[in-house]
Image (cartoon, rainbow, N blue to C red; front, side, top):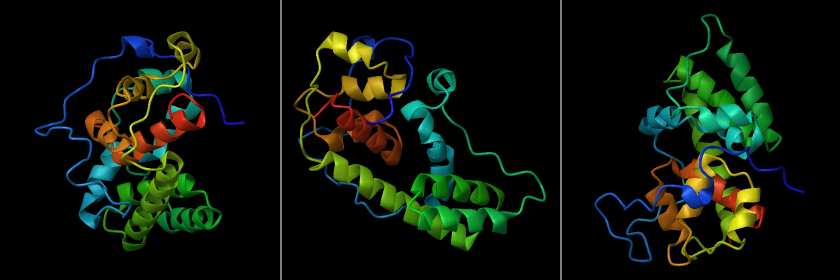
Length: 206
């Protein structure tokens, strides 16, 4: 059975802020430019690092206090001087070969924080991001589908959602597609897609 969702954070989902409008665009049932499952360009490495994609496990149930109270994640700190970046890359390769794309991504981000021009790390960043997005999108199915909340309000509260999951859940109204919910959220695409996939897996939306 899937692991429990993260511990409760401030207000329950019913009290989460209302829907935020798309920046400078209207939702028409289909985004004008769907984000392909392809990897980000090399010059997006800095943006990916600032998004802090590596600690997404906190959203799904790691340190619940840190997950619910931490401020927006900042640029990943460079590893201490003298860190064996080649050693980190060897471990990143091993994890990717074992199918642990999240673990590989975390290590690759550390390498790029120490050496933003590391060619192999850039490639692994793109590969891991591509595979993770494909995996989470496959769980969601048709990205144009307009999901509904499948639980009663009190059952949703029992899920102990964190503030990110609660915000995304507040956008699920049966009229907004997965693709538009991700765009509305203002979160990194990988983070928002992963949270939605977890909500589907736990039977909260569908």
